[in-house]
Length: 332
Ligand code: ATP
Ligand code: MG
Image (cartoon, rainbow, N blue to C red; front, side):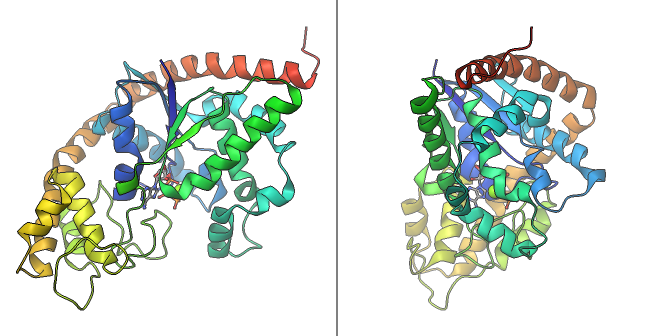
């Protein structure tokens, strides 16, 4: 079976709607037809300000959320990035074939370093995309389901794989991005032209799956729309309204055009109230399941141990082939 791989950073106590609709929901569906590798990039989480006291909890919480939304450890390999040292070893080799100018063109670094202040941003934030390339290339994967914000990093990953193969001999599979157009970008409710993000300055436009449903419902009801009154799917001119339609449609299973018909002659109030209700119905049982998993850390750790063993067997074979091709003397 072809392979699929993706990750979600433990940089928050909860996945948000963008993470879920843009990425993790696809992970669940892809398990059927692909050999899946899903992981928690805890080393990537060190590239932005973080709290050592919460990182390991957030890592377990991320695993609990993956299980709660339907990632199945019997079919998918679930692991923590730092448990696979071969990934960081491969990062070094890849960083030596990455151009400084090429790395400097990554827009995520520009965005995130501007937030931290360019002097405060670490070199790790700059080399983030190379670690991400190693995450992917270590596993010889065919497809990588991500949101639109990761397209440029995927392009770099493909370039590095092709460059390595043509310089040293074919070892690495060149992966393809898998981006589902409708959900590629879920927007901030208060600023509907910016992506919903864990690291946004304000969390007023951020809907976290594990937040109190009442709190999220309130955020949805106060979402920014526009001065018009017509409910129409028009991301260009009506980004706020279109975002709510996308969210309600995805979570409730009603096609967008059916929703648009339903709201003809009604105002934005109904759209918001219904969207909040659909969200509440979705997150309430999910929160319960996550709480159950969090009550059993030994079970979560067992899944991660099993995942790490499987993941290391694949990554160590790739690393050995890479070292061999670049001429590194193997220890005897
Ligand atoms: P940060 O802002 O700290 O980078 P994040 O919200 O982007 O956090 P990540 O862990 O970096 O979260 O990303 C996990 C996955 O979620 C990635 O595949 C990313 O493309 C996707 N994703 C993140 N935000 C959105 C969004 N607003 N819409 C759709 N997909 C998203
Ligand atoms: Mg991100």
